Length: 421
Ligand SMILES: *[C@@H]1O[C@H](CO)[C@@H](O)[C@H](O)[C@H]1NC(C)=O
Ligand SMILES: *[C@@H]1O[C@H](CO)[C@@H](O)[C@H](O)[C@H]1NC(C)=O
Ligand SMILES: *[C@@H]1O[C@H](CO)[C@@H](O)[C@H](O)[C@H]1NC(C)=O
Ligand SMILES: *[C@@H]1O[C@H](CO)[C@@H](O)[C@H](O)[C@H]1NC(C)=O
Ligand SMILES: *[C@@H]1O[C@H](CO)[C@@H](O)[C@H](O)[C@H]1NC(C)=O
Image 1 (cartoon, protein in one colour):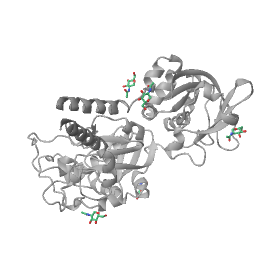
Image 2 (cartoon, protein in one colour):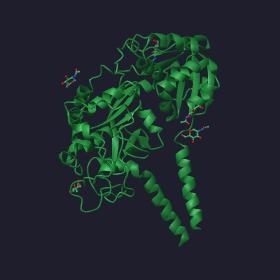
Image 3 (cartoon, rainbow, N blue to C red):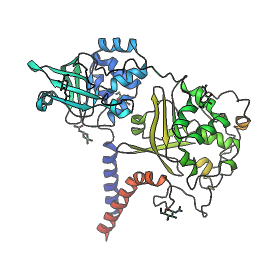
Image 4 (cartoon, protein in one colour):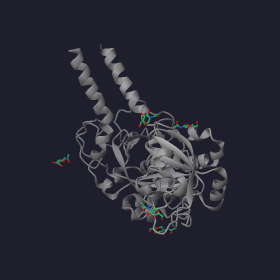
């Protein structure tokens, strides 16, 4: 009976896991070499993850000739915006296209969700024209229906539909937007504007900003805690940390590589941060509930709040709580004390020791082996993962989502014990 219950639990959890990825756009398009460029750009821009994490969508694909033209003239960040306008957040198969009520409709696209689209720039107008022709265009006033439906590519009812159109849908200004080159992005200014002054200040005084900047060209994802997050109860007194610990803490707030929200949503394995210095060290896990993404450090959860900047290959998010790695703030008796000296604190090309700041000079100190600075005023027990975590703070909101699977397990356990009794 008990094993039956476990099997039940396992099965239900597996079903939960499976529903995360219902389709794989890359896999679907692999069968259509005429769209190989479109497919390749979905991958490069990580729009594939965004598409895979959604259902009831329509992708308006472009053939290789049209794509070549588009990508030759525009930088990747512009191509991403342009292609996100081709992902409709509704399901249209060829039948539905011809059955639009009153013959015309506006539909939301992925572009609308990026925050880059003011007004109705992120909407697409679909109009059933005379003679069975269906036209697509930007919903912005004065736009023409310059793209036409040519053929159906594939449908998985009612999850995803792929339709071919004969020209890109262009929203006003979308192609002429200046590509914010990551090297031009003033990270400190952006962070300050987004309400992350404390974090920006720490990056500068510790010199870690240089590590971030040198990683930017190859792709960087930043999780910037808001100023409120630093004031939340349970956040340790940073002035009590060694310089090396501050460096590790700040490096822990960024990942190598461009990981926009859609990619975070489809992440299953623990992810390495810039602070990672060995397998499983200084990593983060990710959970998703609907559109909400939560990061888990092992010490506590933190909700990914806003996107400050999403411009391939740089993405900056704000997070509700300071990310506290277990390596620095975890339970006191570390299960496996690190004997060997900790090597380079980051897999990223470490920037030459920033001379004005003494901080990184002693970075290779055995961080993990040093006694973890205990979080302020917790009566003996660690403020850890305990699902019934009684501590307040902004993390609490996020904890609701975190606990969904745990809650589920509790339900199953209760059901099982009822069955057993
Ligand atoms: C459609 O998506 C749901 C998850 O949202 C999944 O359970 C179902 O299997 C998918 N349908 C098909 C035909 O793939
Ligand atoms: C989707 O399919 C591609 C190509 O078959 C594969 O490389 C990729 O890992 C798949 N993605 C997921 C999330 O399974
Ligand atoms: C779509 O565009 C056409 C042509 O510009 C226009 O007549 C129609 O009203 C638009 N549809 C909607 C729903 O705005
Ligand atoms: C970036 O912005 C900060 C704060 O706004 C400013 O102090 C700094 O000079 C700027 N750096 C560059 C390179 O423009
Ligand atoms: C938690 O929040 C409640 C109500 O918001 C408050 O009464 C209580 O003092 C808080 N506890 C802590 C530890 O901050």
